Image (cartoon, rainbow, N blue to C red; front, side, top):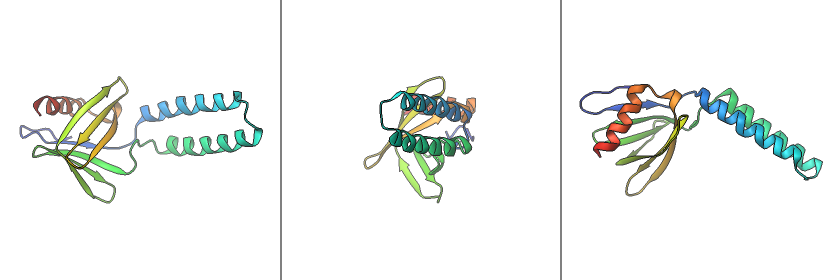
Length: 138
């Protein structure tokens, strides 16, 4: 994270152990509910296979936004870069929900709106502080 007087902030999207834990809990509860349901056995097997496939895929590579590389604040605008370095520019951000595990951040502009989930274990204390300060200043 870069944090200077000119208010530059870079958040890299990477692996999150909290995301892995939340995935295990949610998918585990879904599997238990599916096992107790009154569906036909064939439907249960298909749904169980799908849940196991997607759950294991997330557990192996726990990146909440695999399509995005980083979120950058520079010159009073947010820039969201995808994995092909395509940039989408936003003017404002607002922290919608802030829990102990993650924060939902809404990025908005005249044309685009995007909600990004940022897990707290991927943020340093300075990055978290910069998010809050920039929100208050704008």
